[in-house]
Length: 287
Image (cartoon, rainbow, N blue to C red; front, side):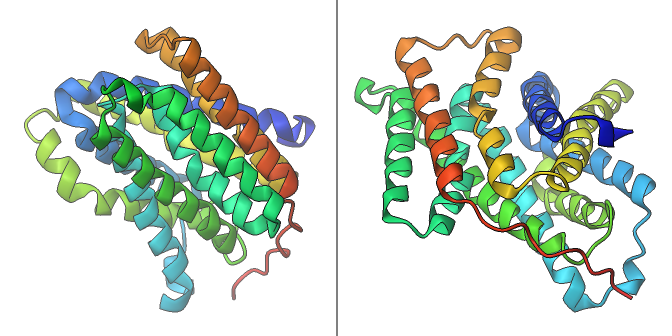
């Protein structure tokens, strides 16, 4: 049925869902904190993926499992750093800074000196968003967003590798539980004492929005899109995040910040068009 839906629609829907989940996650901060929110969301998402995919872990060697395990750790880093950054600076700004991660991957893969212009443009956009000359920049928030950017870059690279050795959603059914376990030390202490039925229902709903729906849609989209085309669409995420920030969080950007978003989006589109690579090899199922 999804074959009838244009691939770009799947990708854009995934991005809209990701940023909707991120915006709504802030509503749990008062009850379980950003760490608790990240942990509960990954925990519920991991359970859902295991139920859907039922991964047969025993058929894989420890060598095979290295990639999804490390990917789980990077997903945990990306998620926790993002949530804590979101507590300090606006959603659109966090996503714009975080996008420097995949942008760097695209630039380094381009093998072109002309491609170096795109990080400069993106950096200009980030400076417009954070306005360090005003003296009000939250350095901790920016640092956390940059940490999330590193996690996102690693996530992209490792996901491509994992796709060569795992069928369907099996890889994600290993990765997301690992991410949930990795965030327990930070999330459980924050959430302890507030694990009410209402909080658990919210966590399940957020998990469906992020990571379950977008990760599944991205997988379907990547089977029909080149990485360059998918990456070009991904550059829209900072703009989508800004829209959700306005609608749900009343985070209204000023003119300078809007220009910064435009710069980051333009840099992402330019870098991906210059950084086209061949599609990854066909999946070879493991015995």
